[in-house]
Length: 180
Image (tube, rainbow, N blue to C red):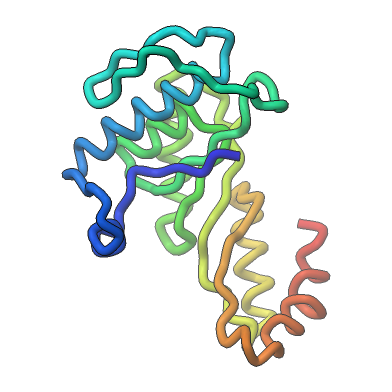
């Protein structure tokens, strides 16, 4: 799976010495990158001419085993650009959990309608804090995500070095939500 986004953490980029263009340009570059990837994974290894990238050939050797291409996951929840790119190019999205999630999924459904894409083809994933100190609340939170059509939740385990949070996830939370 190719996980990709338009970037957001300027401090990290500049700290690593990476170019961090303005938001509009980052989205232009993201869309060109998605177009390049799709072309690289096709039988067309011809040139690519974009605003930001120009390739003499879109070679990709060896080609991916997954056909027609590896799944593409786009992270982010911007309603105008990111969710349009998800509808147009992605096989999965990664949104933030929270009170706006249902609205963001509705916007994604609208963007899918606009580009003629089946909303249900897109896998929905969420990044959300889950605190194993209250396993019942976590299970209810996960049930709520599942009811919205979310298939995967990514989280950070607080105080993971103490091992107890992992034990709670493994013995109380995962078995309770395995059927979701």
